[in-house]
Length: 276
Image (cartoon, rainbow, N blue to C red):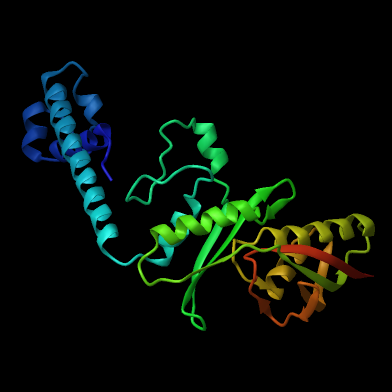
């Protein structure tokens, strides 16, 4: 990434002033800063500014060249999971694809229209070893947090991905409502503090942990306990039961669980409080 003109000038003037011959020539002491030795209108300052400007142009040209080379490599090489994830995030609902391209034609769209069209707010791409497919989990942002795309949005997303994917690659879009995690907790709290307040803060901490995990990030009992124990007034806590509800079925959670939809909602939180 190209440095700024000031950064380049600072680099070369520092090296220049570090030379013993220069210090003797100008009668300056080691460690003197450039701006303390030369005025802004001095011929030396002007020369070094011109040199720094020229080097800045060269570095920008090199950056542009690197970007073009990387773009060419992306077009020629099989795409990575990250590429599929990034392309899913780049989907613009309602916009047409440029012919023979994986980019959308938004020439007549305003910036706000483009932003509104980017309905995929969360996405992940993983390879499924059982099916040899790429599982792409998606979600949008609603009034209550993460939620599925509409059926129409998901259908157009599938069409878009099937047009730009590598030949022979099978894609499976997972666009589902989140499963719910419910927990039962035994909590020991400071008897000198307000029980009701602590209990409400614990419920908030559980909800915040469950619903703000990284997209497609694993839920862990240890992570939830860490969140609960960070609540002021909590002395100790442990989980007596944790369950996940998926499509009306409920499963017990051991140490961890991976989200089928890519994200979770918080279900019931039951807390047994013991004062100490």
